[in-house]
Each structure stands twice: as structure tokens, then as C-alpha cells.
Length: 278
View 1 (cartoon, rainbow, N blue to C red):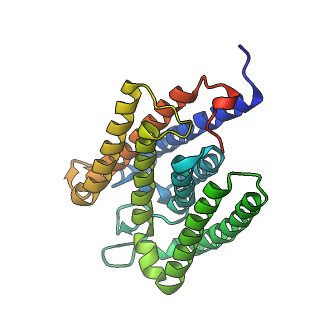
View 2: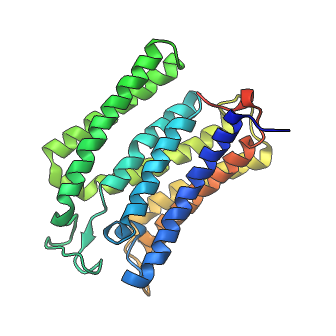
């Protein structure tokens, strides 16, 4: 049976989200011969892989907004979409000699001064675009073009995120650069774990997934939480050239793409009227 334009768009966006993880992994693998195995995936922001790393995360954000569904799933994915660009804009703190060719003058780990201007421009753009998107979302909700309750709740979360980022960046820019990436990463993957639980027990189309798929969602959610919680403890553990944080980030991305593939399989053959869009 031929697919509709809505079905194809829905499928392509889902495939694109999975593809962003492939882009990150491939970019890192191509870069390793040039710079070696770095302490974490996030360290590759400071390498020639940066453009692909940033582009992939921005793409995830756009696709999340387009596919966020309805109900609790919508609110959670909209929140994750707000965090994904921050992962791209604010790099992780690094220590001296951890990335070849990058000078770090601070004691311990920090975001190098050389990227301060890029971070500032990125944050300013993020906040301005965020406000514009928020204005459009509120307008659509008030005019009845989208579900008003869900849209206004997502908008309220967006206000909190935007205001929090702006205040922290303005009041304590050094602390913001030091910790924003780590906190945002934990929040992002925590939201994905929550989406997996919601999909298992309270799906947006009101139909619970098959038992095996439900169990898979729960396992993925638990694994994400355990992985994120373990990274601060085992992140600096090193076996040869491999750090615990590197393994943890790879595992987090694999769990993310696993969840997304499972959900894509669940909804792949949905009729146009059954697709859990807004």
C-alpha cells in the first residue's frame, strides 16, 4: 500500500535522528587517526570533528520539535530539544594536554579561552532563537492551531530553561562554562529515559506497545539512568588509553539510538491518522 506524504515525512525524520548518532560516531572514528583516542567523545569538539558534532546535535533538536508527539511524551521531548543545542554550543571542560594542539592554561580542567567567543555567540544565538520559537509556539497555542494545554506546558518549560541559561551565563560565566555541558548531558539523557518509560506505559497514541517492546523500553530507561549515574564515579578510571567517561558516553548514545530504533519500528507502519504527531 503506498505511503502518504505525512507517513514518509514522519519516517524520514525518525531515520534522521538515528542517523545523527551514526554521524557522530563516524566523525570520531575518522578523526581518531589524526588526534588519537581522547578521554571522551565530548573532547572531539576541539578537533576537526566539531562541525559534524555540532551539526548532529542541532539536527536532533529540530527533529525532536517536529516529532515530539502529544501528552507527556511531547513535553519531555520538547524539553530534550531545548537541551540538545546546549550540548553542541557549550563544550566540555578539558585539562592540559588532553587534546593535541589545544592550549589549556587553567589548573585542572576548564573550557579553553580560545573558544570563549564561539561559546558566547552560540549562547546569544540560542537564547534569541529560543525566544522567537517560544513566541511562535505560544501564538499557535492561543490561536488553537496546536493542542493548547501541551503547547503551553512545553512553553512554560522553555521559559524556565531559557531564563535559567541566561541567568547562569550572565551571573557566573566561568561556572557556566565549567559545568553546563555535563549538567545538560545528564538532563538530556535523563529525559530520554523518561520518554522510554512513558512510551512503555503511557504512549501518546493510547495503545500500549507489545509486551516484549515494553520490556525493552524499560530496560533501556534503566540502563540510561545507571550509565549516567556511573559516569561521575568511573569517568576517570582508565584502562590503557580508554577512559570510563568515553565508554559511558558511547554507551549512552547507543542506548539513545536503540530506544529510537525500537520506537521507530513500533510506529513504522502506523496509518497517517495513527501517527502520534502534535
